Image 1 (cartoon, rainbow, N blue to C red):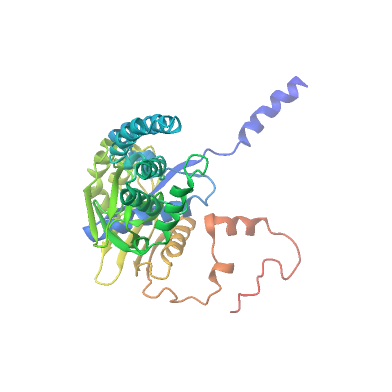
Image 2: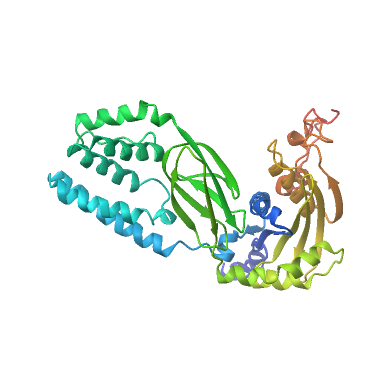
Length: 398
């Protein structure tokens, strides 16, 4: 039995699945107008690559880092402690001490937005502050605190065991009043553009972005871009539009990557099959394969040129080029997924133009023709049988 087991070990080793290859999509913007879309495109293409067996998609934030704002994190920790102490004093009816502590807490929270993922502990602090103002008879100031609370989270519930009926009724009055119906807007920009924008914990787009019809009052703004330190701000929305603009701080990893981009972009644009710059960059990032592209703004739309590379040899395994017309109809994700699938499943160069999101489409392509991650090819190899309808979806003649 031992001899038989030893004899089987070599064959068992041969049957082990091959290790997965580390891969990523990277898009080099060729002009400032392309920066905003490049990060979004990278995300769509990495989603497409994740469908392929044998690949491990490395996220840009893993490669380049995306550190928290350390000062914001320290302020958030202090604010949480201050809120806990304020609540304890409030519950003991030590209102003067509670107000002193909650004011200090709100001061800390003004600089903690970069570390916050939702309205807590800011919402709890505003609720407590409003209650303290109401208890000492400053009703108008209490209303302002409740306005900020409602702007941050309209569904935030006040604890009836902690707060009195009069204060709960005041919240309803503020929420249904004319002032609560006022709206404002904000223009959010960053350098570089393309940072993900989160408002009150929800992603709302990429910089530059215009946020309209926002309830007046306080809002939590956070920006994230792989390779840069996270940025946050406690935004005060008024009936007059406001503007936020910031320079994002790059990480050392991103600076090293950015220094190689001119050479890499030149190799993507050339028709050569060997790309030493792409190979050097990929090896420094610990990759085995990469989809590298250049994005250039046109008068109408943008031009995307992609290359699919083996990092060790620097060989270009395939390529695609397309003129894209934005994302007005939500077609960008599908278009990029199609380009990645075709490029990884096949080899060689192909030029396409997509001026119309419905151009050359009969409406049945996604039903039967899309080969996500090469799964269709894999299933075709396994098909056996005499059924004449095997593998037929009924849409081919259309």
